[in-house]
Every structure is written in C-alpha cells, then in structure tokens.
Length: 96
Image (cartoon, rainbow, N blue to C red):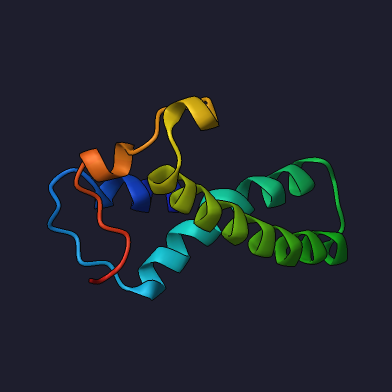
C-alpha cells in the first residue's frame, strides 16, 4: 500500500523529478506488500514470509517495470486496458 500511496502522490502536474531510488521504492512496495500480507494472514512462519518477500520483491519490480514500458509502447487494443494514462497525467517516471 505504501507504494501505491507514493505513486498517487507523484502524478498529475508534471513537476515530479523522480530518481531511480524513488521509482524502485514505488515499484517494490506496490506489489510485494500484498504477497507478504497474504502470507502473514495465512499464518506463514518467519522463514516462509522472508522467502516470499524476496521472491515478490523481484517479481513485483519486474512486473511494474514491464507495465510501465508497455504503457508507452503498446496500444490499449493490444493490452486490453487503457494505455498512456501516466503520460496524459503528466507523470514522469525518471529524471530526464
């Protein structure tokens, strides 16, 4: 949830000058947190939670980066969802 909040705070006015560290924070915290929360709620042990945390950080980061790339390189028809929303909202993902 922290990643989603940070992501929402970033957009809309085009004034964001986000560095790699901030972008990584958003990507890691948008997807990994939900996997870890599921493990905790499911009663997983500390070792299982830590393994899932490491795995979900990697896959979550990969998913978010690919999603950002597809958002600007593919059409809505190709992906079956609205593309280009970040660009229209003036969100900048990294320093230019």
